Image (cartoon, rainbow, N blue to C red; front, side):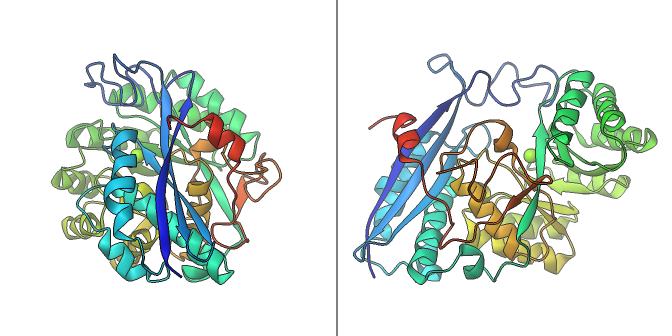
Length: 390
Ligand SMILES: [Mg+2]
């Protein structure tokens, strides 16, 4: 079997408001008005993606998905599609899609983790379809059939954040990750309000999105510990590059510290271990460059005695399925996987209300797809409707 074509389909999903577009809460207080997904020439909030299609001479096709978010991942939709169509994709033409190790090595360009992830997901989907097995089997076999869902909560007034959580508790969600990282005292108020609203049995993570310096992060943790918030972890309290600051925070408080923006590649993961900078690694497919590297990062975490959490990238359904396969096939991934996309937009896959990604959630969990490959099919009408150009 030979790869005959790799192409990117640009997708843009308009939204009434950009995710986490909150003032003085849930984001850094020194953004100076910058907004990651909008600009003066593109003022309307939207989520951008590239779907990746790999075709072969035997008629087997694989579908992948890559996110574009210039504020977080550092690439625009235009860059993403150009990287896939003009540079990375052509490297694989004429090659056997089952040669995963070699093919992904050919894509080991600097940066471009989102484009690499989109191709990696499509390759895994293709391999699974060609062999007639789910991707979880390719990754080691599924040790669980259902995955608990965690949801992020945008920053805002304490009562609004608490109300968001209680409404999702009614839908079965039992794990939340509020966005903080603005003002320490106000953030402790937000976390306390949520804890009071949801009770002691719900798991609360918090994500500072690099919002504090080390001293403020230590103060936040100590105040939250004293207030009995019971944080499961604090994600990325300081700037991505400040591993010494992360290590200082981690050594100063009882709250486990998670690396997100600090942890993209296997090399990042090793640096975090060397610096003693985190207790938990946040694994996102779009940061790691796909499933294969995500497994390697999970192995580094396991070897270093760290936990792993799979983070959210507002996936379209293809990436959601990939996360389920990753979680199902990796023993040391923490149970609750972040699927904030479920409350942001509808997936672009067939039968989202009755298929493997069935909504509403059952007991706050999603089923791991069992069909060949990633186990989902694109809803072609929705893809055509939301195509950004071409
Ligand atoms: Mg984060």
